[in-house]
Structures are given as C-alpha cells and as structure tokens.
Length: 250
Image 1 (cartoon, rainbow, N blue to C red):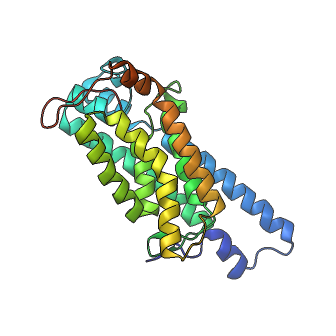
Image 2 (image 1 turned 180 degrees about the vertical axis):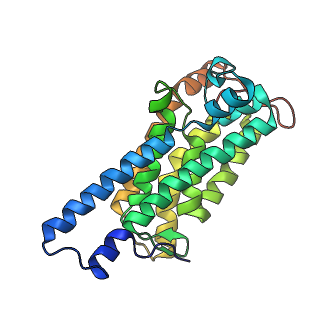
Image 3 (image 1 turned 120 degrees about the vertical axis):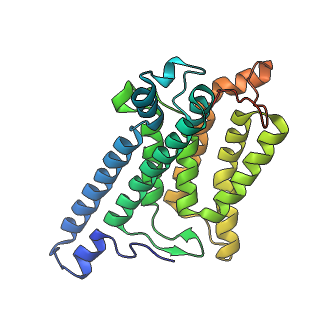
C-alpha cells in the first residue's frame, strides 16, 4: 500500500526540474517543513469538543466536568452523539495534517510501517501540540490522546491496534482511563521499535520517528500529571463499565 510515494518536493526535483542549485532544494525543503508545522499546529488547534459544545449547546465544554476539551468529558456531559461528533472532528483534523504533509514531502508504506524520514510523525506531533494548546481557544484544550491514536492508526496501524487493545484491557481492569492513556503512551515508541525490528530484521527506528514518538510519550505523561497524582491519592475518578462514565480525561 502506498500513498503520495512522491510528494510535491520530489516531483519538483524529478519531473519539473525546478532546482538548478542545491541550496534551492534545501530552501524549499525548509519552507515545506515549516509550512507543515504551521498547518499541523493550526489544524490541531481546531477543537472539535469546543465547537460542538458551543454550536449545539451554546456552552463551553471546559466549564463542565473535568474542564477538559476532550472526548470523555463530552461523552459524560452531552452524551454519545456529541462525543461521536468530537471523535470524528479530532480524527479528521489529524488526518488532514498528516496527509497535507505527505502531499508536500512524500510518504511511502511497506508492510504498515512508514519509511519516510518522519515528517508525518512531526505533523502528528504538532497537531497534538495544537490540540493541547489551541491558539484559537486561549491555549486550553484537550490532552492529545485521541490525536496521537489517530496518528498512530494512520502511520502504523498494526502497533496502534495492539496498543488500543492494551489500553482497553488496562481500563477494564483498573477503571482508570488516564492510567490506560499513560501506559500506552509510554509503550508507543517501544512497541513501534519492536515492530520495526520484527518486520525489517532488526532495523532501528528511524531518527525522526523515534524522536517524535518519545516526545509524544513524555508530553502525554506530562498532560496527565494531575491524573497520576489523583491515582496515587486514590481520588481519581473511575469509569463504570457499561454505566455512567466520569470525565477525567480525553
């Protein structure tokens, strides 16, 4: 499976032959990378939870429940329909950020693992940053779990599905959504490295991929520092499987 095997930059070199000097290529590369970062952050800053709550209920989700502009708070406060719209919106903005970057810089797949230099992981990282610190909403957003999961599903679906299953098991046993989120965030770069090594015969995780996934893991743990403290203090809200859900998390 492959999409955008040749991004716009590659076509500018191979098909259009636009660069007479090497500096022109690198200047364009830097411009495309900066454009990708900016677009990914701005797309991430579009908070589906805030938009849905304001359009449908004339309220700001951040004034309810946990105060978090995330999926679980939407589910608990407004119900399944609002949560579904939030889910679709956050997944869509993440996909747009990644595919825009793929269009500019190119991306190829082999056995479910991205073989590019990591630009799409960089796009996912900045989409998460925009989601957590949205420029359009006073830099107060969600916790980036759904955006990260969407990025993982698009770029590395097999490891992502393994981690989603593990997340479900942890939440089912502990009843802490935050604990499941933190555990799979930490395991994401480790699982990805294991998958790459298995599929490609011991090949290390490409540098930008490794850096972006490690940063994401650290960042998500940091976003959940309050949840972890409440788990330690035994004051963290639990979810009731099959019943009412508590909003402590995205």
